[in-house]
Image (cartoon, rainbow, N blue to C red; front, side, top):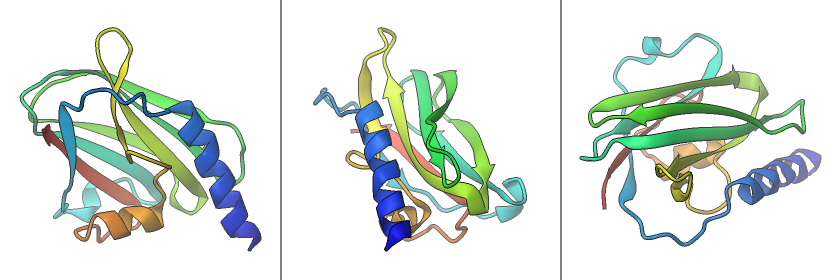
Length: 145
């Protein structure tokens, strides 16, 4: 029960960080299958975003928390063009808590997030993406809505 509560607390921290602003959605998320698991770094938890839309995404940020820390960490990649993959190596696989990935326009306004509500965990990613066969690698595609 303590682990469930800790996971819920981590999700709430991230959800507050990237609150959905109700913006018009340009994108939709699709689960992707990765053929070569060896492409991910051994032992690390990674999130890959395949931009299969026709837009260049000015900013993609992934905020995450680890199991052993209550601090929200964040990574960013800028100007992610069509047919490009943004790769985020977050932490050790066994230390991953939860994450939220936000997509921001050139004014810094949140226009889409993964997941749309709450926070993503390894368990949730496996449920939302039936192609997810690697518990330490989440691969999402972003396409035009």
